[in-house]
Length: 334
Image 1 (cartoon, rainbow, N blue to C red):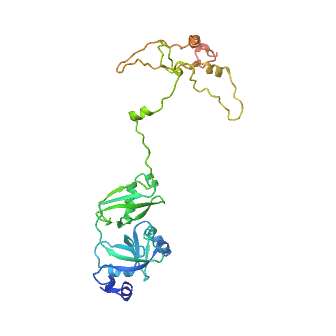
Image 2: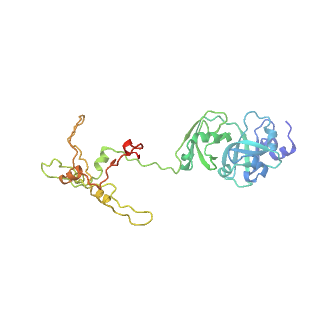
Image 3: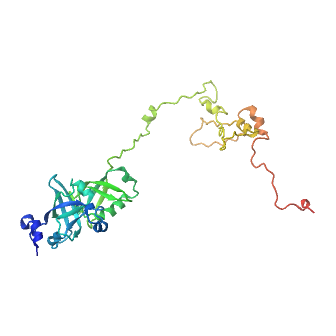
């Protein structure tokens, strides 16, 4: 394999892993995607994914490597490690690499810090568990489908990573809680099981079971009960026995123009109509049917005349006179 002087100078030859057949090792100055040239920043979508940009000189050593190119990124200053793939080799001779923003924050890197890049081989993933960093992730209708689309821009995952995915112009952070079979796995062309842990700010709703113990401890409401001996309505609240205790739509209306609403005789008569309420049958036996044929009458005797002979001003439905479109011959004008 041909190694140009630039590659040997920057990667240190065989003693730093730059020899033929050895693993690739190099130290770069890392920058975020905002430092890319305008033409490359618009063409490459570095932020949405887990891949980095390396210089063209690195390809001269990796050209004989078989399989997928996976790398371990190590920040020796803070001993932070993650894994990634390569998106593209830039045609420049600068000793720089470009990382996504979430990867810079995870590795505690600043612009221009040194980063050690090493080629590795990772096992295929079988299981991964994510923990959303916000409960807003639960608002997504199908989070697994969204995650499957977002992970197409990733080649590998590491336990402890805090990756960021973009959905509907909004970034969601996911913490990699668990991986199988190793703490760093490859997710290229694999069939893995995905699970979600509850978000860190999620609060379980309080559930109070309706058991007999809870029912016994609930406070009883005090109602006025009839206690007259021999009364057939004994034990029934007075609100059920009083026919005029409930009056629907008895409020006063207001006009939009601010004028006082006129009170005609019909409205006054409607307010005077007493509404009767039914009394439950406490002697009912379970499994029996009762067919009661009682005449419909008012509870109070004094209201019997009003019920049988309604007043003229009381509203009577369908009390109008019918009209024929075709008049009889006797009523036609001659």
